[in-house]
Image (tube, rainbow, N blue to C red; front, side, top):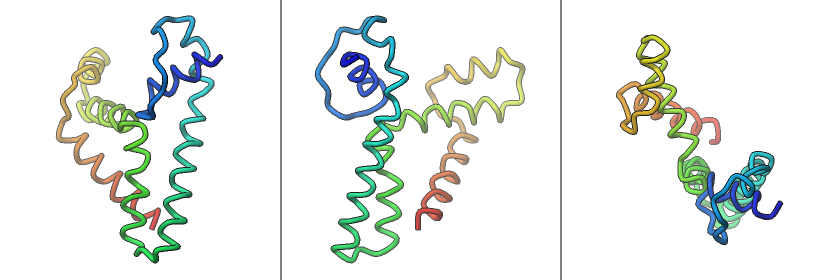
Length: 127
């Protein structure tokens, strides 16, 4: 189980972890431990809120950093997937074309636009 926890953090976070051998046996239950990364993000955001309250930081500073905390902890893997899907969805191509677009490592214009809108709206809701 420990190796599955470590594998989950190695795959979907930038939190330093001990190295484990990259094999199926060690990753078998890693999906079940993804919520732990969310808990870590929640703790970091709560600590940020406390710091902002104690130091009387403004709402814009709080909201901007609060929005960036999950990106820093996860390395943006969730946003990468969001951008891939956005580009594929905006292509209006057939299934094969959409799958090719999702495999492409480059960001397209539609993904960039949707990412910017997402981050602006998320920051606004946090504020």
